[in-house]
Structure formats: structure tokens, C-alpha cells
Image (tube, rainbow, N blue to C red):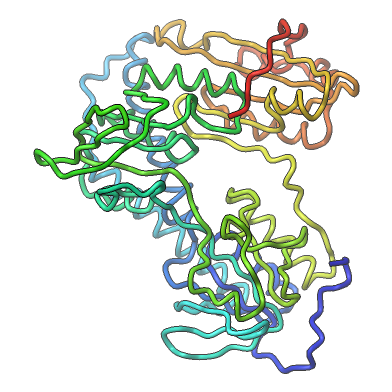
Length: 470
């Protein structure tokens, strides 16, 4: 598609300029921006406006992360002269306040759509052709000049094992009425790592089980190793391990592992992957085929094989992150309705993992940088945070700056430690602008902070053997 090929020429009359299927972050942003350009927009959402991030993802999960970290704060306070007594956590209070905040945000999303002039339809929409959608409950058919698919993805229990129905996913975890005393979390990605940290912090006896030898595949090898070491102190971490089956036993759930051992828990949370929400969507009616992983193939402008149909967010399996879905939705609306064509750059994405300790990343890990950039310099700092000197907590911070030697350009920054997400957001600006190591070096340090280490590292680390990516 060229930057001028956005208008389908079928000579038909339309009910709306844009019909958005899905009321998550990407769909809501696209609908609001398109309406701002004067387009008539309808948006169909069959569940709750806000999508995974607001309703059962980023937002409620981060609130739980905060809750889980208070245990450390109470413990650390004694080193600074505070006497706080014996803390007591109440799951019901957290759930009620978290759910109320989610409802509040859902209302804000709906209000913003209404103020933008978007008509929201509480119904499931399916595609019947390149320019036609059908609302399932009402049976109404809507003709749209453009259709945007922004239906996201759903968690799956893979690989499927006997007794898998006894486990819950990251959707159902927010519905738990009581805190489990014992939980088994299965997986090694963002979701598994974050929820394992949450439950361990809240006092649940937590086992994190992963089939690989390190957590967080695709991240820098040393960050992965350091997180594993930290988690092994916080919970029962079992790597290179899989589940054979799940059974009801002794008032709980018994997980039989591949080595024949058994774990008895109250809940099993499976967080091994997500798949695009394409079932029954009717894409075949518009001549759209799925790719090998079941996602909707799109070009850089988010256009599908049907010129009038676009797709953004997790359903395209490009980068399953809320800020990416939002930018893709914005880029779509600017391009199609605002005569300001642009495409999202998926090559440089700052991101955070809200584990405890937290991880912030922008750019390449060391292993990938060696492959893509040739000769690199790696600057590394490992140190005890200042707070730990009085609290006595066994805690370390790891920071890495990766530089392409030929250009002096910073191609990766990795932080493991307190507020890593906040740090990486600011650093991400510099890296996105193409900052060089010399720019880092001439930046004055903010002292005393952990972040100052990023601008005070002067000597590359001793050259290490590359760590295999796996």
C-alpha cells in the first residue's frame, strides 16, 4: 500500500465512515481520533469498554503489584527507626478497591468516546464482507466505509494437559474472592513473572514453574539470570520443569510434574501464552486469511488484504503491548482520516516488567546486539541500592548500557531494580533520539540516585562469551 491508497472505490453508500470492532486501548484511540477528524464512527464492544489493559490486565495487575510490595516496605522500615507492628493484609479490601478503580476507568473511557461523538454499541460484531458488519444480538447490519479490527487476544492453557480445566488464567485471577494460601504459577513470560511476584509479596506460598532454563525469553541474558536469582529467594522457583497432569486431591489441586514429583496447591494459574481473538469474527467473508500463529496479517499502515479493513493491537501479533496498540490506532486514524500518513516503528520499544525486582528495557539485549551490530561495548554496574544499607535487605541492582562501537550509538539499556520502569521511560527518549554514549557521559548525574549509574559508567565490562538466546 502506498501512502495515497487509503480510499476504497466501490461507489456504495455507507451508514458510517468507520466501524470499530473492539473497545480496548487501540480501538478506543482510533475511534476518538477518527471522530475528531469529522468521521462518523460506531464502536462495538461485547464485554466492557477498556479492553484487557483496563479491565483485566495492566491496570488492575499494577495495583496488585503495589499491594504486594508493601510487605518489603514494612520490613525495611525497622532499619530506619520505624516500629510498625505486625502488618495484616486483607484480600477483600484490595479486591473491592481495585475493582472500583477499574469501574471508574471504564466509565472514563465510555465518557470520552461519547464526548468525541462515537456511538458505542454493546454487542458482538462479525464481518460479513469488506464493508459490512453484523451485530449478533440485534441482527442489525451496518455498512462502513472502513472497518477496524481491534479485538485483542485471550489467554490460553498450553500445552493442554489432563485436568487443565482445574487451572485459571490471567482473566479469572481477578475474580478470585479469597486469597489462595498456596498457588502454582506456570509460565516464564511477563504475566507469569508478574503474578508470581504479586502472590509471593502478599504472603501466598508461591511456586513458579517454567519449562525453560531461565525466565523471560527474549530479554538480555544477564537480566534473566539476575531475576531468576532474586525470585529463587522469594518463592519456590522450578526451572526446566513441566506439568504432566492436574487432579483434585485433599481439598486442593495436585500438580504432577514431569519428574514424578507432586505439588499440592489451592490454585493453579497458567500463563503460558495468548492468542488473537479471531474465532467467529468472519474474516474469511472479506477474503482475509490468518498467519501461522492465527493473527491478522497487516502492512506497516495496519491495512489487511482487504483494502477497507484494518487491524491494530494484539490481534496482529506484532508487539503485544498496550502503548503499541494505542499508537497503531492513532496512526491508523491519522493516516486514513487525517491525511497525515505515518506508521508505528516496532523496532525500538521501551518496556517494563513489573516483577519484584522490576525490569526496564529499551533496545537490544547483549546477545542480539552482538548479532546485529557487530562489535559492541557493554557497560555494566551491579550495586546495592542506598536504601538497603540501612534496611539490610539482600538486594542488588543491575544496569547495562550497550553501545555499537563503530557509531558510539546506545543500542540498548537494561535496568533491574526499584523503579526500573520509571527510569527506562526517561532513558527511552534518549535512545529513541539516537543518543550516543558520549551524550550519556556528558549528562550530569543526579546524586544520590540509582539512575546516576547510567551516566557514570566509563569503562566497558570485561568481554564475556556470548550467552545463547533461548
